[in-house]
Image (tube, rainbow, N blue to C red; front, side):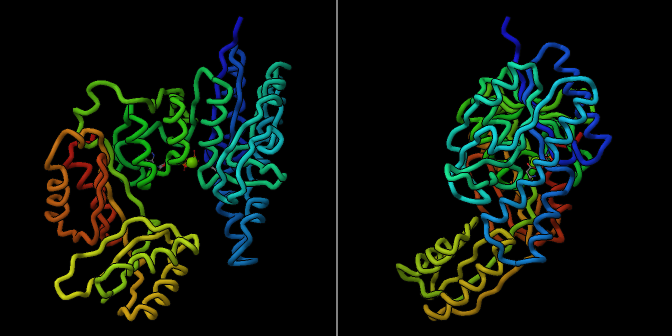
Length: 406
Ligand code: ADP
Ligand code: ASP
Ligand code: MG
């Protein structure tokens, strides 16, 4: 008889210490005893990846991306081995593999590699021999045997890609919260667990700062229609299903609120308003590998305008340097870097069919005397850049006024 196959992914906080690793082992073994075949993806223990990033920074503030991947991939190698040992201790069979060993082949974009193909032979062989197969998340290998990583939060992507490739019957993402909430439950304790959310909404929330799922993993899940169950590794409760759109979902206008404090804003003043200016700046930024997020430029009355844009904080110093040098060349004015910003966003597929949502959002912020510095929209989200000190209060007010609180 065909045994059902489950891919289970456990995030860093789920394997943060010895007791938690033992808990994960117990859970995994209990599923195996129920007759499931299991492929388990694990992240690095607790904050290991952050600690490794800090360690590298102390040695070299501009480390080679190849060496960064060599370093960061060690975190997951530790967890897979320890989990295998914990499972052995419970008397069950398990075997662990690195990304490279199982043949998760990626391109050569170190620190943000894309998966090209997965060779599942080793995993299938492991399963056939009666093992729980444990795979290191977040990592792959190029065809030239260089180790790569899949971007922060990339174990989610490993799990989704394996579920797709192995045609798993289900893919479960175990984390330190009970599922996807209407907003980060650490910021707003009144946040509610969402039972079902569409790929599009989850992708939007993830891209706008809800770190609970890696955005790229949702893209892949959507593309190959892999339903995901996000749930807690500390309880047996069912969590949130991330799925294709279903009927009635558009009835809810706003389904979630996100907060992102990881961006900085750069403003270039007094730019001559003529063709070819924007390209000079943004081409230089692109060539330097800086990805720009929101961009705002006003129509000018005086033939001079200001350009503001946001970048990831990690790129802020570099982007500011480049902007200053471009400003000099094109005879523009001052360049100001503002690190004290936050982006609050509202997300919901219902926005496609309801109007007045933006006005309502701006009204809520205005009523709370919160100034909006930049605005951007997509068909299912509206984002505002505000001062960082107002971030949490903005989230709480939007959450309450859009009727999301429990
Ligand atoms: P893991 O280590 O399991 O990958 P992460 O730290 O990457 O876990 O993601 C889980 C965290 O995401 C939660 O602890 C929570 O604070 C945060 N989070 C942000 N937004 C949301 C949201 N809308 N719903 C649930 N969690 C969220
Ligand atoms: N350990 C990696 C990170 O912290 C991957 C992951 O946790 O998904 O980004
Ligand atoms: Mg994560």
